Image (cartoon, rainbow, N blue to C red):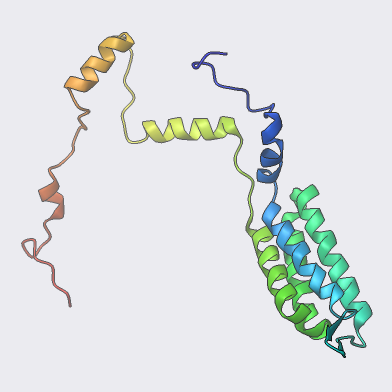
Length: 195
């Protein structure tokens, strides 16, 4: 393969497969959502030991907290493996995070709540990148915007070496471009007033 021929984008290299997979879906949103679901599900059932003292954080709504935590983990996996439903999963994540505040020890001691809200917001805001063909066409269109199309009759075709020499000697001139000073002078003779 020479330097002039670009590599194919359809078949990623073996070490880049995870990177390509990660970039085609709301990966970080799903990860934050799953991280948020763990403390929400665990804390109502867990206990902490400080020396000989056991602090039980169990609540009467432990089943509700477990359901919310498991649903958040499921929504995080949904964001990873079904990115087409990312907006629904993001909104559902935010709603479940809000419900976890009264149900699950202030949303898993606020840690789970924050992770879930951030993950849901990221999922709802994520958009897939445009395909490579559209990106290349958009860049080509952006290069030609504002420049009149040159007809084949008006300019003879130049070989690449001659075109490079002409471009180096004569910089690009825009038709109808006014000097910078004409556009920057305002009605007060160029003086700006601050109020």
